[in-house]
Image (cartoon, one colour):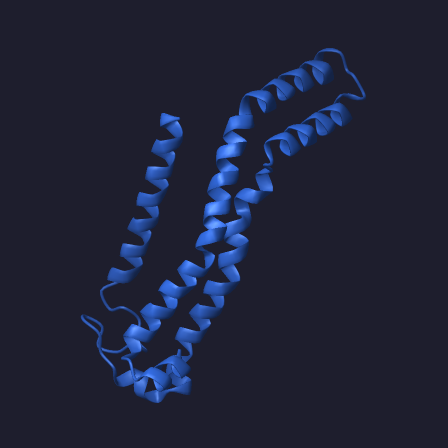
Length: 159
């Protein structure tokens, strides 16, 4: 962030926002991959449910000792056929977590490396080195996350 500010002369808040947007754009292909995998998993769901019904019957009614292995084999075949696996749904978390945790610590410690950041104000924040006094940014982040989850949930209910 500091290198970007020194190289371009842009205001600190623009550098912070720019690197945040760049990070989001960097992980966007991973999010698209996750969405495509979720769609394929949804398409495979009828077969997966049938396998689960067969497994429940074989293991509880008939006490079949080989039921678990057959279930694993059939599930692997379905995952291979549809090119999906439930673990792929976590790919955005694994991709974004290290990026944004490191970004958090970089912004948090920015005023240590660059003391002038503490004197820069932005909109309602008297200092970029101080927490948001009105908690508007955390509330906005939480509401946007809630909105994305609601839209995702409604689109899954519709399909």
